[in-house]
Length: 187
Image (tube, rainbow, N blue to C red; front, side, top):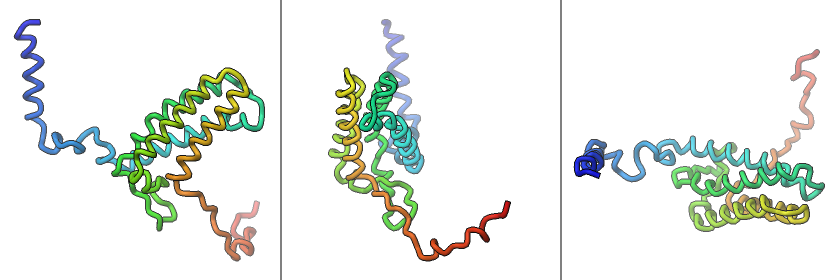
């Protein structure tokens, strides 16, 4: 490579940072730092991802109560889940710690201990990804069943520690005496 060609690479690398604003040069600020610039969108993205993981888990969860219906689909789902779980911790930047215990509909169900115990959270996600990998490589139905239980257990362990527990709506006396006939239009 000639000296002229080398300078064609070096000069832009030296000059470009000078053209950037101070804010863009600051770590954690500017384009690409969506955890800082768009924390609510990051929360929505991880919620969508978790919902899709749950859909992929449906045929895997059925293995505990019935024979494998579609071995290839179960393996593919487990492989996808494993890959996605590797990215999960990266969708929890500190700026998305927006849980509000007083809100009936909080922006996120992710509990603050995630960020206080992030190493544990990260490790649990990795263990769940490994469990999904084992599931994808299971050779026979008993091995698939064991792997499905391990995968579900890994997911549930993390959710138990770091996801707001579901509380069903409280039933009030007025719910029992509500006049549905007057509230709903007649046919």
